[in-house]
Image (tube, rainbow, N blue to C red):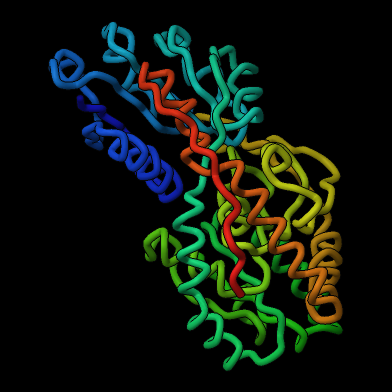
Length: 358
């Protein structure tokens, strides 16, 4: 019994596709990743189901149209989008004949606005066993950071460097914070490209290039700091928030869809955005920016630093609650719902309480 998966070559999608593959293989299925699933693949007797996992733009789903529409075998197209796909994207194509599974209710709203059919919403997931292992094996790196930075609060950014990720907003917040709190914290960047505007500050350091570490090493990096900051303005999902919580690290972020679908105000440090703005991204979609004041980001980082330094018990409670909350998105609970669309029945696993080790 073979399942073919065609994932978009993007770090977060590949990591999630690997979780789906693991779930299938652990239940006796053979799984192959393919750049393109062809009509001939759908006719192969051994191939029982097909999953496309991609961005909901024509350039990404176009190759799936013919095999998706021409096979009677179980199939699904699992998609993300960061805004509204342009209708010109799909004019004179058969994309509107397809049915999509959205990775968030925000994605569903955007696709529906563009006239596309969405038959289900299934969030992304984490591997709580892997997260626990990363937490346990992060102690050496945590100790290294403590030796380097002393009692400064360690804040980490993990993500790409493009306009929707909000690094310019983070830069402005750092300028505000550094007027009085420069020696209270250090900002670590696991990102890419030109970061000179941030690295000019003495308490900002680059610790790696985004996409250069495997998934487990990124989880270890998250588990070795005190907070993860996620200054993004626009997401189709926003995995770093959930991943950081899975290793017991609170996240600092703006409160907007889809982050508000799986984050929590109880253990994360959140603030409101003030407006939405549609920003054109090539000819395929308009990003939906959730614009906020950099002063709000600076203020919430200040609050997080204060709690870590002055109320360690409260901080530790946030960490424990983050793990408990993240268990609801373990891949063994989330992805059976996706595989059900492929006529593959896998029982959702109950995730038992995981001991917190510090």
